[in-house]
Each structure stands twice: as structure tokens, then as C-alpha cells.
Length: 120
Image (tube, rainbow, N blue to C red; front, side, top):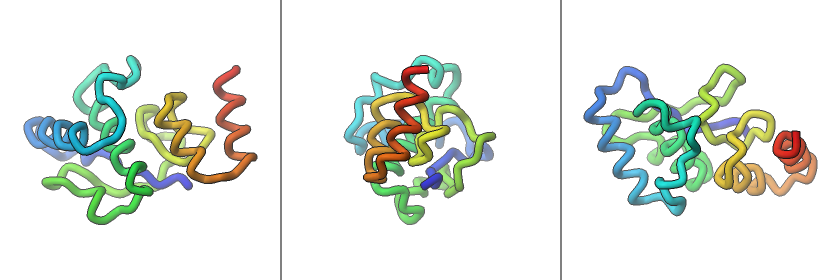
């Protein structure tokens, strides 16, 4: 459940910007609702937007985790950016998109882990 599309930090800023723009146009979520903690840099914005974009497509690494060379496929670990949305209820951001990713698991225990984080 911890798969995520994440940014290739070797990408140039122009490519990253184009990738964010593309994902925002193609995603169901509104890019105006990116959480404040994920707006500190272009890279944080990209981590959030691109991981949501991948989650909307069930985290499938190909072709959705590649756009003009700016994405990579990764397994989520605790060291990943807090802006990467995954199906891991212990690490995904506490946002509607994080909730939707966990909800897709259809697992009560995972949902309970996410909800405990919300109320803490």
C-alpha cells in the first residue's frame, strides 16, 4: 500500500513546473487546495500534486508515474516527504486526498490508523 509517484529531484525547474501544470489539469482534486505545509517550494508542491495524480490512477507506475522525465516510482518509507500521498495510513498526509487513498484500501484497520492520526 505504500507505493507513490514522487519527484525526480534531478529534474530541472522548468520541467517540474510543466509537470505540475499537467497534473493539475488532469487530476480530480483542486490544486488550489494543496496543504500549506506542501507549498514551501516547487518541489514540495510537485511531491503532493504528483503523488495525488498517481494515486488517482491506483499508483500504477507506468505510464502515470512518468511525464517528461519528471517522475519516478517509489515505495513510501518514513523518510519520504510529508507531502507524498500514499495508501499508507501511517504516513500519508492528513488531507482529503490522503483519506481517499487510504479509503481505496477498503480496510477498516488502515482507516482506523489514519483516523487516529487525525484526532491526535
